[in-house]
Image (cartoon, rainbow, N blue to C red; front, side):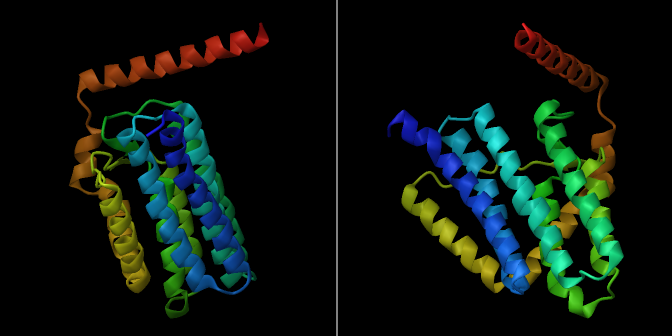
Length: 250
């Protein structure tokens, strides 16, 4: 496979995720909120595939990382908030919670792109992808619960996104290497999500709660050597940014 083709395959999945975010916003605004929720869930799947494809094809880049962050803000930040506001537009707390959710998601992504990981194999703060998935699937239950349920959920997720609670990144989970197997895997996953989209809410919530369990407590007690490694990485990142800033000024 040509190098330039390999380079753009992961970006195609990222752009697909971005379009699904736009589509979810449109569907929410036209009253198709159940379908909008499903579209966000499919966007989660594409978001999980693009990075793994980049590593599988050995075409990871800073461009792909930035493009992925922009797509995530739309699909897992703006789209779920639009979905909530379409259902609770006259509830002022929904607007406050929506603003907090989008702000926290943007801050979470900026922090992820600019700072080294505290511990390999872990995220710092709830990833916006998981937060957006929880927020979108939570709307499927809004008719069964009081009006404050959705805004409270969004506010809680906003706090978790900007927190220092560690979450496993599952980056070691690999994809099928055969193109046919990959296509079959994707179709099976989408069908499963369509028929059981309400149940997606449960594992996502369990993931969000992991940081408060015993595993999260252990991760927060990092060994001294790991703390030194983190500080060195952070200092190197700051030094690199200062050098780039100096070059731009020069």
